[in-house]
Amino acid sequence: MIRPATLADVPAVLAFWNPLIETTAVGFSPTPHTVESLGAMLAARQAEGRGFFVAEIAGQVAGFASYDQFRKGLGYARSMEHTIILAPAARGQGVGRALMAAIEDHARARGAHLMVAGVSAENPAGLAFHAAVGYAEAGRISEAGYKFGRFIDLVLMQKRL
Image 1: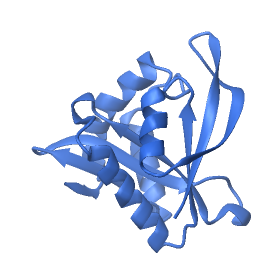
Image 2: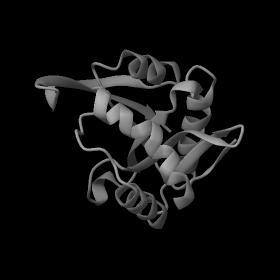
Image 3: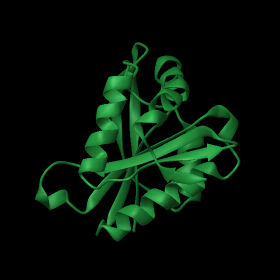
């Protein structure tokens, strides 16, 4: 089941997101989220009318997807960038596709024209997933990220809504 996230979902999201932050280069931030920081992100996105959805499997939060404006300023008001993270047990079950459909539909209904994904070049599963749901590579920024003592390319992918 896909539904809007609530503050009560924050601890469950942290349980599968923070280990990815701490142990992988799928994202470049070295700092885990806290209940406060993720709660503030959720509240801010909802206040702006952006989507923040969770997927539930057997009553447990198994993933989330959210989006916000790609860059600041009115010129980018119709371009959004998303984040999608799944718990390990939810991968390969269609949960990611359902979450992507939810945020794309939500953004489209609010006038968004473009959805952008910034994917670490060290995340082949993320690149393949985005390609499978209709995203095309728009560019690659060489050595844009830095984590674990090395520079990592950022692959920008896009989909017109």
